Length: 392
Image (tube, rainbow, N blue to C red; front, top):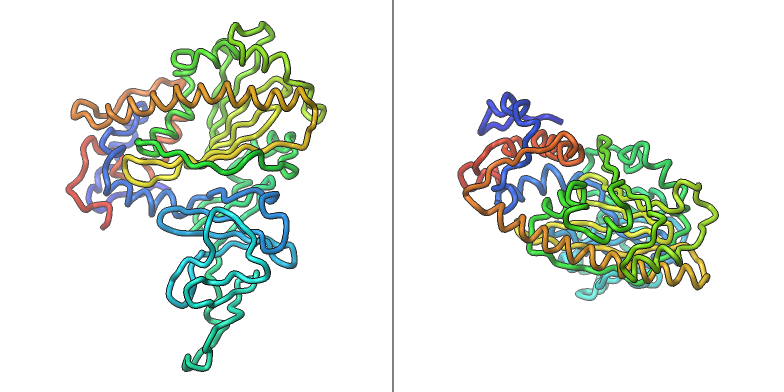
């Protein structure tokens, strides 16, 4: 994975001495650095589009807007799932609109009515005889590589990384306890903009040291027993619910209402676990529900959080109450995190900030920093190279 920058061939020698340092502040607001990230980090990365339960019937589709690309996954007549660029091969119009829907038996472009079957083949062209030397087989929708893992549909724009299952490594077996293939959506996908660099969201998600400082609700629920570890491609954080009732109403009622989940091992019935898959996909795994969140870069200082909750069918009143209370508790955590990352983003723009020291306990941040420096060697510089380097 390691690379040497043609602009700075001596950077590899610097990398070893920076093991205990975080990433430099300039990369959290630099346009050239974002261009480098798009190529080296994001285009080869796996991104969630939806869950299999979101497209249960033939013609059902879900879309993902990402790095200026529009991707659509669709359920075929043969029940298979396929992924395509949501771009007509005639004049590049978007074929389907909206985050989800059902296109019937064909995906039809609203511009000139070119249509494609659910396997992506060009199926209809008005005034076809007017096109000379025309071969429909050459003009089907462009396929996008996809993988279904634990019931979720992932896509990637370019090859390069291991499979999603391989990247999850030892955590795949843990997640199997939650019967994720059987999940159903609770609500809809929401998009929330944050005026921060995507790495600030990612860093904060995998930062365990701020929990007892900045999240009093989580501290009341977990005490000081918040764990953190980092595998090569994924981070894991966790906290176990305390038996002593919280003095906060929502937290105390959640503790009281959370029912037994029979299929979970005893050591997971009171466990909140968080997994982050490189570079920007996160799963919040609770006994009562599972949320996913993506940190999608829009600009060097703007990120869209894409998220939705999924649940197993369970009509018990206690479970419905627990899910509502979970939302109340985590709504407050999200408000606190928003304030934190905005504070950090502002500080990253200061000329006084270079590379902050990392504790030996900040294993997830060390892992993330190490990989970024390997993929983009300019990450090892204390200040930005001359403008335009990222596009070269």
